[in-house]
Length: 262
Image (cartoon, helix red, strand yellow):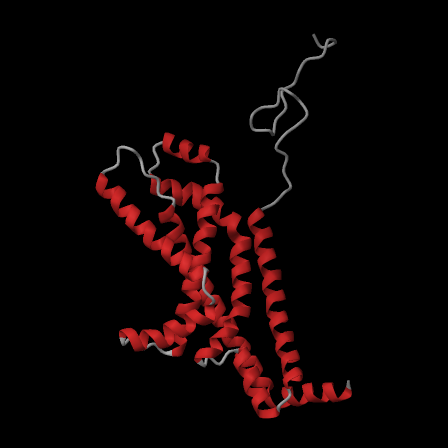
């Protein structure tokens, strides 16, 4: 045990700053990729739930059909392949096949974003479909367009419902960015590999890295739960009473005269 602790201390004394910088880069890539991925997911999810009526033009139906097929292919490809393969394909393949050169940092943000977007697209689609259809009908009954209904009625509720999944994707990205070391991104895992190559203290360095990853994910989980409770609002209100003649507001009781009062 003393040898193990001595090795951990050696790794931290020499490369402590490098570990922290690696953790910082991991958080930045994960956060930016999750935010952009959520935007992509919302766009794709909304397009997939655009209603098509019988009286719509053939052109609209054809365009929506083509777009949905393309988006479906995108979702299935990026959900069905590992991120490490996507990283190699995009960073090296785009340069070789299409002569498009991307810096490793641009490639890292791009890879995490489109990967997250593929998962979020299905989450957003499910969140939108989970909202009761009566709310959409009610919004249209008061003259709202489809865009207004989505912006002011459906999406705010769907967003609250999918907050846990957004947080889950962020935590997954914190861990999965480790595969970006394959394109030489100097994240936390890349630092670990460098330390092992220099000191040959694999288990000691892995213990430090595991502790840092666990700290980041537990902190993210705590903050996301606080956000969920904040969005839930205050529970200190009554919506119903025991009186069967309660007003529809649920806040005021209608007084029923007793026999003595009559």
